[in-house]
Image (tube, rainbow, N blue to C red; front, top):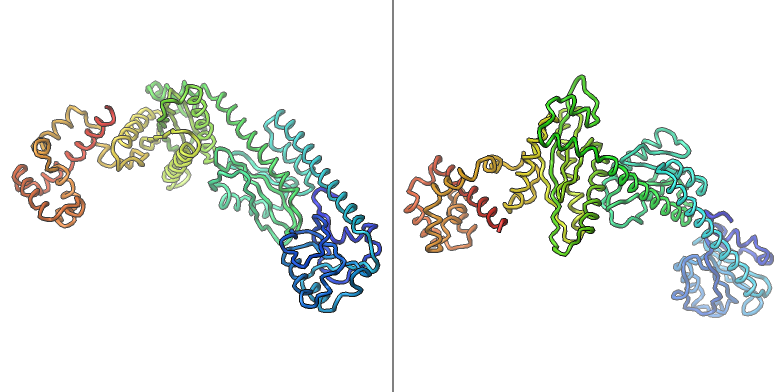
Length: 556
């Protein structure tokens, strides 16, 4: 029996021990799988029957007219493979209504016209099933051994897929977000395109912690794709699959796919680690860009490995990723391992999103420069969305898998010149500083979304602090002396656009309390503090004051 086949009622009836058996009912169920054989004479069989069990009986249950149908229905509901009944010991016939019931449910009902030795039947079938299981395990062991040899020799997935095809004897598929896929043998172009489309829409963006997930895609009436994602660091980077008939047994094939997916994950990780070692020379280029040492744009793009465009342009994004080890007990080796995992994941995600990139790790900071060729008016937005998705994937991986590791990321403005990356990296630092110190900006990763903080970070502290003192100093001093929270009250009142009801609700105070504070604000600031010019200055001073206080708090 082939490894991808199951033992069925039809196969069983061809065994010599069934020479004297007759199929009395359920001929439409000959393809039912036989998984084990049991002798059962009790009437309450449900607790003792599992799917694919073949039941042997002398028919004692038939002597009770009331429970006959219920006995057979219990076997049908339990998804038993079939029922064999011996004549001559307890009974000599089967009622017609039971034969009709078995036919209606396509449930094989087999009779032996003369007494037989049930022990011979169980020994024959069990030895066959055990031998088949042994052969299956031997085949899997052989496949695993050959897989291991292949993965030690190279990182070529085509050799792995050819091996899978030989063992499965089915068309096999490899689809990847990072390299060309393969079909062994080739499929019709429309089928290959349908599989690629399904992978891109349904599989590629799955967030999987369980690498044993299996997926199904209905290709046509004759074929479904049994697919196993290749998962590394919780991300789907590729998938292996094979085409099978919708009703075909797949347990053995699932195991082959599981082994193959794990081998593919190993190859993916190894190729990324090898690439990590090969890109050390990128550090020099990033250092030159950071220091502004490259002035010729063509030279910079050539060193990055970009083709020089006759028409159009590239969009470049410069960013910094800061890895914070919040647990003081984290050892140096553990830190380096965490950094390496994050680098490999980051590089894989950039490759998955078709972004050409430069990456450099220095201490606990990752410097990043990536490029995307402009192909349409939305290229810039596509690049921002891709980077946002990558940041989300990396931060999720760190929170789930790395002990007390936090990730902070900042990207400067997108630019059309690689030689301006030093400006983008400076802006990226500002994004990280603001996200660290200003609570409402914690999840902002792009300089372009910093709003007014772009200007506040550009102004030196020597200007900001006197500006705050000029406009809020009298309130700050009054709060220190009397604890009336006038600065907070002013902020809430301005945010509520002068609505006293909304301001009181923001502050969780009675309206009369707010009136008292507003009177004090008018006394200290003057009655014109809501005029447009004064209001703009006060709003700027409030933002600057909060930012300065948060920075001082985080630097203590």
